[in-house]
Length: 167
Image (tube, rainbow, N blue to C red; front, side):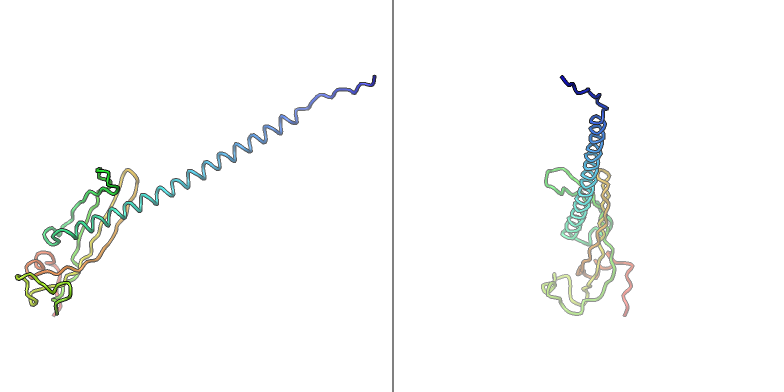
């Protein structure tokens, strides 16, 4: 009988298997890192969009109330997802930018209150800044909105005292 001499294995299969295992592990770790980075980016975008929505809601709330009674900075708590828990605190600061005597009755002011005559009616322009800083998510935005508010002489003098009207 002719016997074939047995060769001892050199361990090449084991070395190649270990190298492949390391490469597959590196691929999995890279995929997980990329996935978590994408998740963080999407989360940051969502938090920013929610903060902008909260700022816009606070501006609308401020405009829906009697505007000149409280022209100073106010803070509004906004529940963005209607779960009964306030999600964002928004600081709203209206600033009177300009005032001009109303020349004619605009369509929106055709039915002026009896106390306001056209001669004592002012078109005032406001910059309303809403600032959101959320410590939980790190979202920070400032949203500006403009508004024209028709005011009587007394309200204009209180709300826009520093505005000088050119003759």
